[in-house]
Length: 323
Image (cartoon, rainbow, N blue to C red; front, top):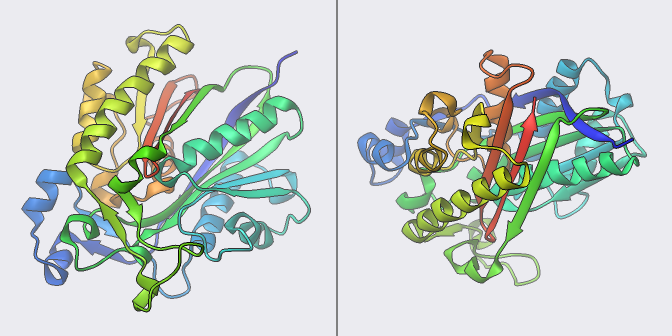
């Protein structure tokens, strides 16, 4: 008998501090109208003292466990998608594991930038399908504002901090129907961080770590690529566009979300949008949108969900889920 995985519970957590577009106007040469017209973002959350990717991820994980009606002792796998780990090592997954008190189980990080939660979901799904694991925590957590160049108005307005989590459990019936992952490192120059451990840090604040992005090129690539993976996902599952109840996209830019919905011939009422409140939280964003949609009552058991994301690398991925 084939083993599937299904979502048993979701959770999310956001830092208390909020940075509005009006606040951004005081930091850099920009204004609320410019930001909203180009991105759809109105505000973003910013991690404060003592808040890290692991502490945010831990809080989101605890809420997901509660929603699933289980404890950390029931989990046998933790997969964390993050681009902003607390430390080079131990992994953020190990730090979250420590906080949960479930030592000895498998715990690992996955770095696929904004596609991190889709990649992490796919990894956990495959482990459960293999029969090796029965209950997994899939976490996306980021503190991107720690690597933002606050003098670059084209990027600093985009990003926010937060974490999301879901519990996957083994099931006799499909929950995760399929996942699809891709990458193309040939476009690394369009969206990247400027320094690293192996390539070297700089004698500058934060080691010279900054996000660099060629926005127009990234926008075009994202719209084209997400359109392709939507088609790939539907074909793989022998479904029509009308079979999708909800599109839950990576929350990077409202224009990209709108363009993807148009390719699916979906009304925006069928699209979960949180970018206005959260900004781009990278690996956390799809899970944040999913958790909000479930807790608000929009998404109900039995609904067919299409999750998709596009991020630096380039990486992109999708997951088709019967919730």
